[in-house]
Image (tube, rainbow, N blue to C red; front, side, top):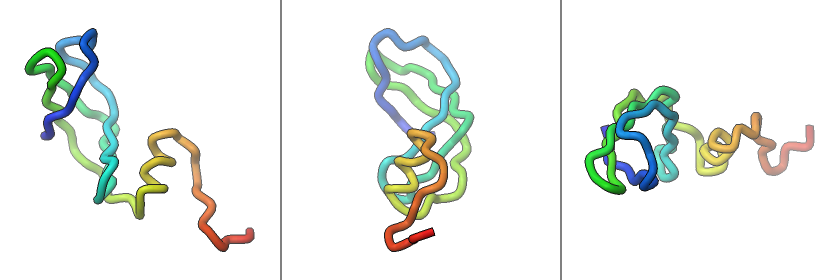
Length: 74
């Protein structure tokens, strides 16, 4: 569970995915969000395994697929 910010027009209860944008960069594919005020909500879900770094987190947010590591010429 974690407290998050939501948009003013967001529904009272909804499902979505969430992604941590700071370490350990975990992702939850099935998050239930419940509003507790105008712009605040509680997010409930089960985090997945931590991602390697911030680049991996951003790739999953934008669904970019596999990352090309620096120095990888293949």
